[in-house]
Image (cartoon, rainbow over all chains, first blue to last red; front, side, top):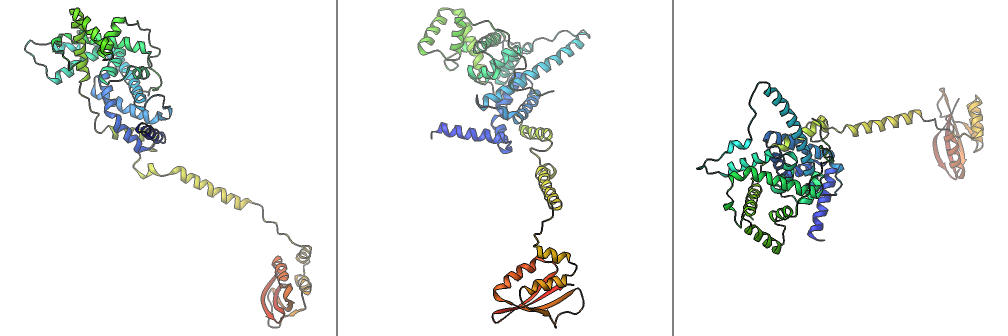
Length: 205
Length: 217
């Protein structure tokens, strides 16, 4: 029996234990995926508190719905699918709430809020730290529309394959590619003022 | 907030997307390092020949490099506790319970209780066992004179007389007699059928067995 076969047997046993609601198996699953799921949701929502809340909901949902996992994709892809759908629901919920708040604010004649990126307008002498760049990229991701953000985060932050992204999002492969391309272009436009293309070298490509 | 179904996209059917041009497809493939060595070299030559496009591609590659090196955000360390607590609450203590009242096997207890009740009902309500009584015994039981009928039964096995050492008074009268050794088993069987007769003792005397039998008056 090859190592790959061993892995499949172990994975099958693991899934069987999860379906039997084995608490130790579930704890192991959370330990295995919690950072990946949290990181994905954190990048999609941009808010650590909301991300924590949604990550918790995702694992509860995994526990409750594990019987519906049929093994058509890897368990990781299945969990990413649940996480993405939860994040989309939360984005919609937050967006509706934000709209309501905006309406009430407009009544008080508050000027529209500027782009989050405006907080990062560069000064000529400014040297960006890694943390600043991270916040900058995070803010630029937040400027993307929800559909593009999901595909860009899954591909360029989480490193998922196009095929897995299609399974996770339920989109056609062509749609995944076009959304990714447009999302990348928008990110480039948003981040271009902060990036010196001369820095581009072999190590980055 | 309701829990969404993970098998369904909450936004419904996605709107149709315009297809990518061949150039955009190649740009994506180059950024994803999915071009073969020859194709990649040709594409990079095209970028070198077109400075505006080259700058565009380098900026994009820089942006992707930033995305790919974003630090992984760590999940809160107490996330598992919160998840377990949520599941415990939703399952009303069935899973991840820590208190005995959540862990108590109510289902097993109910099943055991049900089985016990079923057994008790069966024992109490079942029909009484039918005692197979031979014709002689029926006669014996309904005759109203147990002593006489009993004595007649005993006479089939040998000669019986009232035991002079037997109890005087009371409901029982003791008879004594000798029964052939080969018939003692048959006598035991027959006496066991009659509640008004009782085999009190057996004593081997030569080839016979001396027995004492009590008969209810």
